[in-house]
Length: 313
Image 1 (cartoon, rainbow, N blue to C red):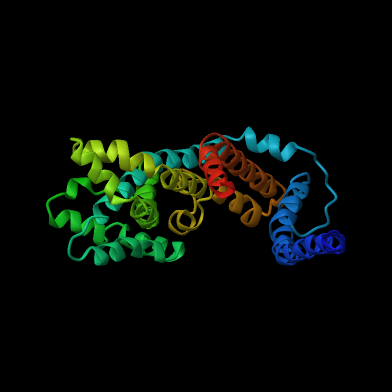
Image 2: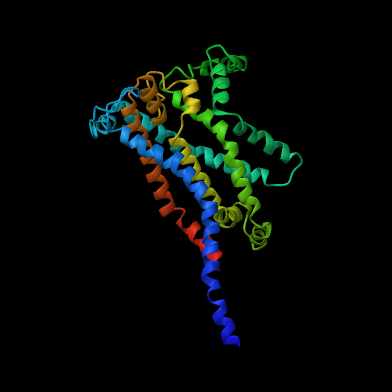
């Protein structure tokens, strides 16, 4: 009797298996279709257009192969734009992330009004990049609020042409970018800190560790996964900088604040060199893709493996 029941039940297993995969496919296919249409297809189109000398209006007839890439990689202007992106990446990792971490540690402690401080520090991230760029452009104009504020406290000697001097424009932009995004990293790190049991740090303090030692040897290693994600988002975001820089300087003065994204926009849409602009877009995509894959392979790998191990367990 039991054998007949088992035999009768066997055909149901493949049906149940097919039903499960049909359900999974029903949920995945719409998202996959959107990803193909709005991500993979534009990348493929840009790669195809980059092989032509094309103004974006006429038919694609002037095939030039990889010449757009040769011109881009041999251009001092493009190398300078890459240098500006790297400059923002390095300063973000050296200054912005540690500053955000310090604020997150401070606001993770209990004191009156900490919720208000969290809100105040996070507010700049809520503003759009265009609005932020317009506001700071007005504030940094010669004789505007920044210059008058410095003069009023006796620091008039520090007044500069903040957005018009090619030697300091990238430092000025970095300060504005940090003001805009440090709140995002602070909230991200604060969430990571709140996921760490306080008992672990208290146990270290009981064992004789000082506050700094407990933070360095207990809290910071446990915060590592969140910190690594924050670093990754900062690097990828720095490679894609466009909005605020375009609103404030348009890559000037004399190309001193160009990034790969602003240079791509200038050549593609303003100079109507859509083939060359597409080549710049493909190179930018390649930089971001290589960085993302390398970071995941060598930095995030243990976090992903740990999550998979915990899930399988």
